[in-house]
Image (cartoon, rainbow, N blue to C red; front, side):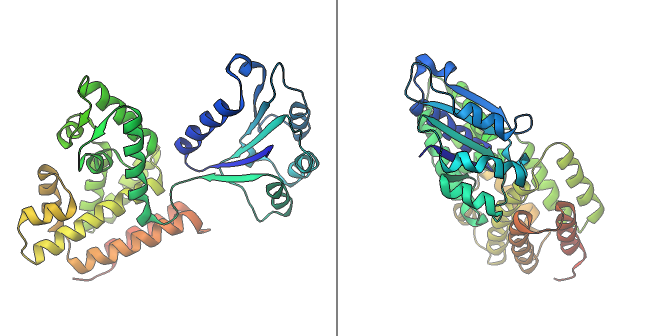
Length: 323
């Protein structure tokens, strides 16, 4: 296959794959001569074709990578189609985009000429935590680290689900524990960034108190600081899921140790959850959790703006009256 279309919805997953791909295709000694990275922002389809038709230098293969391909319009794709239908066998043409309209007829034809790979978190929100946990375990193993039971969950809770941020925290933990290679919950709490956890607790508290003005202000500030609405929603889903278990356990008068076992929460963090659960009834928490799951899907698929979707969600949380 000489044509590859990569959708990099999750940058870390794409970056990890492209490093392996280039290492497999290109010979180290001649890589600099046989790898061209172009941008669709300043490269015409005709220039891409000319580059792709060039012969490799002192090697069997060359790679031409075209990034930001989401910037190409229908005419640009039409200009690329003839080459894609008959690509050079000595060139691996890699087309990279954050997203593509796969309903477009010419794009369908181009995709049929090659291989389409999407690098993204699972589309179903409830599958994301397990996916990230498995990824963390794999990356930790490659760094020579062993994650003790519960440590990965605490790392996600304190750092959020953004993959590059999690890998950065793993690197910090490796330096913190050197030469020891076992990472515990206490190690994570001692080194991990508390930013995401603090933000989620504040948002959850404002939900509990039905403080719509503060919720809107906090959300706007987080977005200005570069927080992803989808990422923030994923963290809130994880947070609310634990709050639900804590609230149910308190209603059933279960011992704290039992609730901690059910949630996997560290004692210090559990006390914060226990206190916050008092702001909600179980019924209200359940409704918020269901609405968060719907919001997560809508943020990916709805034609409404992110601002409108988040605004509707916050209004429902704060203005819908229920016990």
